[in-house]
Each structure stands twice: as structure tokens, then as C-alpha cells.
Length: 335
Image (tube, rainbow, N blue to C red; front, side, top):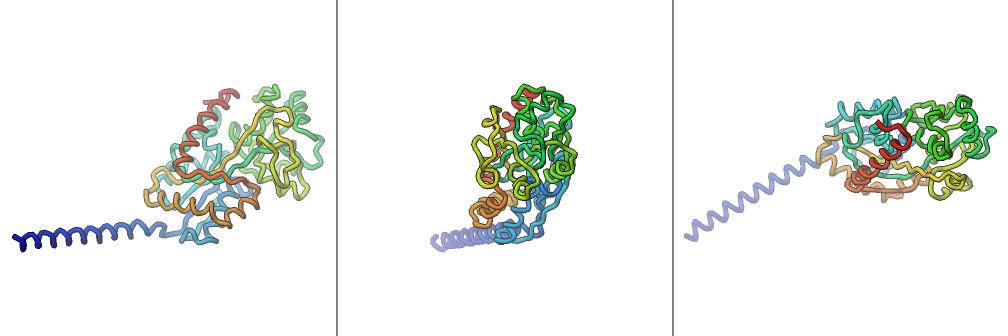
């Protein structure tokens, strides 16, 4: 009997050993991700917030070797992010090697009435929120407008004479940043003359080329133009004054406009991203935000760190989606 029992124990041990080997084999297979270069897409032209965020992530990941394979950045502009959003949600839905940087337009474009996107954050796999930024109302350095209320008074007097531009489609982020003060000032937001460009860089070019009187853009991306003396920032959408180059710029509230607007930015994977790739990126992004190299990127770009992991970011997006719907409803721009 003992001989038989020993045989059973030996057979059981062998089975467990084989199972362990099999399990280790599976682990080695899953650990192979990534096996080729990775692309982070900025769904806009060069120079805007999405572009700079994507390049900062790639630069830091490459420099620190947190990611074994090289990461490149591609710009795919169109419709303030709407064009590539459709591609990402359909053609790249299972592609573990293409990620995308986004911000509030992933919510706004999906909820607005005109020029909207059929796809939103639920058609992606949120990986992490990385930064927080704010909107800025900007004019050329030689503009006749000295304050935000100067611009609003001019629009109220004759909306057709003032061109507001932004790097996103009508009803999207830059547009909302620009018309929120007008709305709060008693101006019909539909009367504001808004011209959209594919990215903040193009909007700035339009401003400097005298094709716009004022632009709404990200506070962080306009800093270099403030340093060069090309533009003046009239107001920012933060609750309190910012630090650094824009420390002397008043907030909307200081200008008597009781509103604010936060621009978060995050990284998204395709909706059907594999579990291996998802686990890999959530781990790597958690490591990324702790590096000195990433902190240097935040300082260099004038961003504020606001990290939310994948689970917390998804919950945050659910809450923000409700806020955006309320905002668009108030502006009569919801679908």
C-alpha cells in the first residue's frame, strides 16, 4: 500500500511540476510584450498640448529605458481630434502597439451637437491621467485689447468684428475655453465668431499672422510665445494664479468672470487591448511619473502633475462626462 501511495504522490508531484513549467512557459510568452516599436499618436498638428504630451512621454520612456522597445510619435490631425478618434476606435481597436494622447475633447466631441464624434472614451482603454493644465485667452503683443473684459466688450458691441480662434473644432475644448467667459458675461455664445485650426500651433500661427484677433489655447503651450514677446495672455481659466511665466496673469474670476476650466491630459490604449499590454502599460506609467526625467518634462512645459492610474482615471472620466454634458446643455450645444 505504501508503494502505491508513494507512486501516487510521485505522480502528483510530477504533474504539479509539469503544470508549474507550463505556467512559467505561459508567463514567458506574456512577458514578451512589447516585441516591436510602439507609436503614440497625437491627433493634431505639431506644437499643441497633445503633441507635446506625446513627445514628453516618448522622450522619458526612451531615455529611462522603462520601455524596452523604441517609442515614436505621430501627428494625425483632423477635425480637432475627431478624425483620428474614429480610426483609433475602429481600425486600431486590437492594436497593442498604438496608443493615443487625449484630453477633454474625447468627452466634448462625443457629446456636442455639431461636428461630433460617434466615439468617446468608452471606445478606448484609459491607461492613466498624467497632467493638469488650464485654458488661456491670448492676443498679439501689439493688440489694442489689454484685458479680458476689453475683448468681451468688443464682442458684445459687434460679434462680427472679432475673430476668436482655437486649435480644436467648434464645440470642442478651445472653443469652450473661449466662449465660457463670453457666456458668463451675458453674450450669446452662438454669436461669437470662432475659427478652428488643427492644433494649438496652427492657432498661434493664425494669431501672429493677423488672421485672428484672439485665441483660446492651453496655458502651458503659450509660454514660449510669451517669453519671446510675441503674445500677451489676458486671463487663465485656473482657480488661482499660475506660477512661472504666467504668474502675473489674472484668472477669469479676477476679471469678474465666475468660471474656470481644467484641461487634463492622459494616455489611452485601444478598447480591445490585450490584458498583457494593459498590465504592462499601467505598471510602466506608474513608474514613469516617479522619475526625475518626467518631473523635468513637467517643469519644462509648465504642466502640473495630476496622476490617476487606470482605474481611478476611468472613474474620473465617468464623472467628467456628466460635467461636460451639463456644460454643453447650458450652452445649447449638446446633441
